Length: 401
Image (cartoon, rainbow, N blue to C red):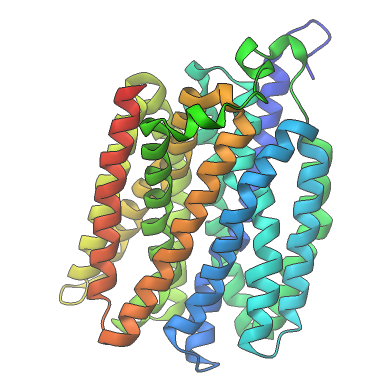
């Protein structure tokens, strides 16, 4: 709500802070899967493709759920929608702690937890932030809130590694379920709500009036959807496989987890920095800087095979953070700018869902290529191609704006 004096800024700032804390937990848990993935491959003996399929199913379900969550947000607001999402996350993680087979995890983590993530994902959260902010503020607001993904990685990836070492991966999942139930649930249900009518623009008030025929005939819309798929595919491919890759080239798992945590810390800074660049110099400029970072990250992974590791690991963390810090925030910012009259929940739900589709296909494809060829060369090429396609599609949307 606005303050009693009618100034909406303090409440908008509180919304951004609550979204930051929520994303910190949600994506800290989500990004910790890379540690569980390595455990599934090395301890359980499952193939890279089979273990990656857990995450890929999770992302496929996420992709189908996020647009529906966006429509529900436009209609009912954040509190009931996010309450349902967090409860499903909790249930999925708790059932994962009881899993004994790969099929059990496909159901619990892949399906149930995937629905919960789709409801509470970056797209739906972005729509809440966008409804509280103007386009001139949106890049920075989303950057600050999405910085929670990096901070969450900084804490939860090393934490998951320690929990697995001490108690096993099943009890680690139980601990994460308790975090969702006792911290994330009250945070999102109490802390997030609709903006007051005085803050809503005319386009926001007309958000539910969707002209599907016009939307589906618009090439800019389809370019945005392509950008969404290609935005998160390469990032999540690296997220899922990076620890396994680093172990393959001789880096100890604890050290690899620390590198991922460092990348998370740096990502938070890049989310904020590139959010400012986005508002000042344009969305496409910020997005291109991030794409250059992902190219650099792939280059470091290739170089680390034959060069001293310590300095390259730091550079990998830096480049990966640069790439992560421009992807989801700048895609949702551009979508909110261009298509807000179609409904902020709807358009960001679609962007989040298509991003989830890319995040599902990318890690699975990289895992399959790894199993078939015995190397990650083909997978790294897939990452590079997806980044290049995303930049082309993003620039098309930004210029058409």
